Amino acid sequence: MPLSHLKKAGDAVFVDSYVTKAHEIVVPWDGKEVAPFSLIGAPLSKTSISHSGASFSPTVIRKMLSSYSTYAIEDDIDLKDVMVTDFGDILMHVTDLDESRNRIRNTIEELLSQHSNTIPIVLGGDHGISFPSISGFKKNKGKVGVIQFDAHHDLRNTVDGGRSNGTPFRSLIEQGIIDGENLIQIGIRNFSNSKPYSEYGHDHGVTIYTMRDVRQQGIEKIIEKSVNSLCEKVDAIYISVDMDVLDQAFAPGCPAIGPGGMDSMTLLDAISLLANEDKVQGMDIVEIDPTIDFRDMTSRIAAHIILTFLTNKQKAIV
Image (cartoon, rainbow, N blue to C red; front, side):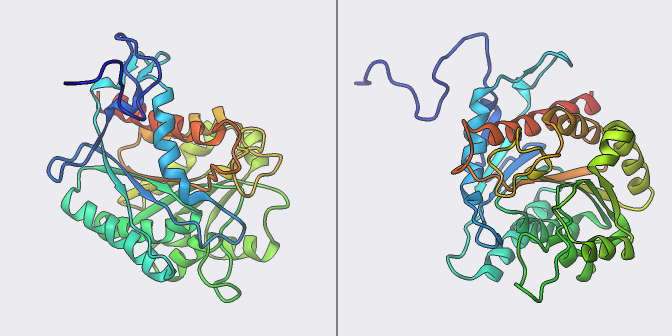
């Protein structure tokens, strides 16, 4: 006989029959059907050059979806009938970082080869996961362009410390997975990089927008120029969101917090604009450490990024 007054663990605390919570549209993969959108966790943070508990982030971001409804009042769009397949988390090797990266690359490659019509949203993990994730993405998407939101170039050399969360985009360029001219960095800011890495970016054709550029030009103009530039040259666009692009006031859960960054509304506006583009076919969200966050502020923004992306993809479809 069932027990009274029980609810499923992890469900919203308060249930309103007129409100659909965002986590309700996320459905575990049944081994068969796959929705137009997918979540997949890449809980790797052992490659971080600073202390990081970003491996805990996929679980917390999923949990934060239960804090929000599916209704976007500004767009008058309700996501309650939009399904998202959750493939769970990629199992990381305990000690072998190369093997962990291989598992990420292989999983994304296999996912898209078997289910080419789904748009993967990869939940990191530190930014090191973008190298294998984009590598797997390219195998099925052809020529790839990347729009990277970040305070840092992540173009560090791989000699001093091997592949880390500071090297993914250098690795992608040097491995020939993306061309430097098809990488656009937005939000790069003062005292977070070194001149040799800025020069490396310029020498390899990387387009770099600093935070001053964001303030002076506005995010709409930058996104418009970025999309127009990439759409002429690539088959698909991948968005990589390093949450430390945000000012420390908005993202206290980033290992590399700092002042002078983007506000959350500017980032969400950028995601809205990008989601409208047909060639935007994948995204990752990285560099959240829930163990140092305050009231899950940073993970809550990540949940909003996901919902904003879904909302504007739906607008584009309709």
